[in-house]
Image 1 (cartoon, rainbow, N blue to C red):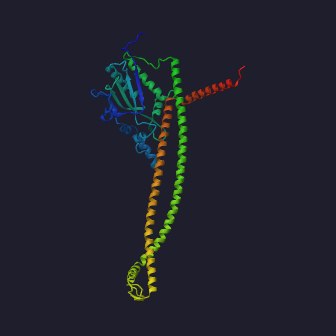
Image 2: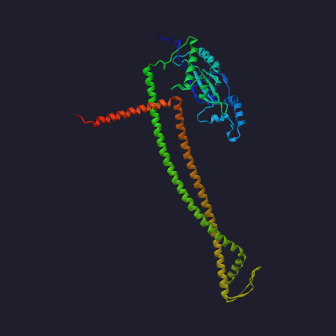
Image 3: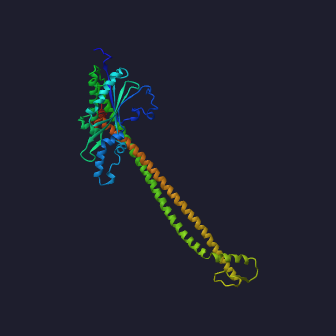
Length: 437
């Protein structure tokens, strides 16, 4: 049959992971670097509700009822929107992009707009568990006119929060359940495509399906390619996981070594601190004795300075005020005793200076210990953050595989391939070991 460009068209629906309201409403902050948008053309906003407002409308009462039943403060939900926004597995809002025609085989804007408008108006009837909060018609981008439909999946639960945001649970509530390799999301997308195709046929537009029109052999080859690629990715991920485990073990050993060295350094430091403390106590005792006799020592020192200017064997020394030292004459031997006492006082003074130096040394050692502990904590924190990022990437990849493939079938195919390789190796070994006649 001869192809008729005026009525044989293609359609497409793309269900993204997260909505981008700033782009959809043409917020200048979001589109300032998007050169594919023709700003002279306008867009049509059929529906627009802020996600936070929609969450309060959909889940506000359920969250309130849930919190009233909780006796522990840590189990209450302060902000359900923030809870989903911070989740690694969920998104606050999802988006479906719908297009009629293509760049190579376009449909008039009027016809495309009419079909997309009817598709939008019947959304709630088709999808009672996918709350439509945004519908934006974009004729200002390159290619065909298309519709952005932003929605929040929700479903009822028997335990815990009565109404929650959940994509797969919402699909299941609408009757789409997993069948073999076909996930609920794949079945829902196929249903939406079928409805869009009916709208096109009602207007005399026949829809072709390049992917569906492939021969069984081509489809099987395509599936085998996907399985092969998935197996390769699985092998690569397993190797990377093993490498990461070895690297983590190496880092753990290095950290244990650092902790051991730090422990030994702390023991040495504690020992030095005890020694310093003992010396400090001794110096403080000397200092206290010196302070108690400071005025006597000072007067004795002044008297000794005067003694040096005399050569006589005896001389008169005034008694210090307030002290039990009599005024009178002293012999040279008594003067020598006084000089010895003065020297002892000077030794006490030197001990006081040593005490100050010991105190400064103690402060420097404490600061060095705090800095060493801080450096080790920062290194350990950086290591744990890097490992968490790597583990998150692995979890995201496993989640992607589970959403798009049946892991049981992939593992079966992988085991079959391994068994075939083992069989070929055994046959090759047997052929080499069998002597030729």
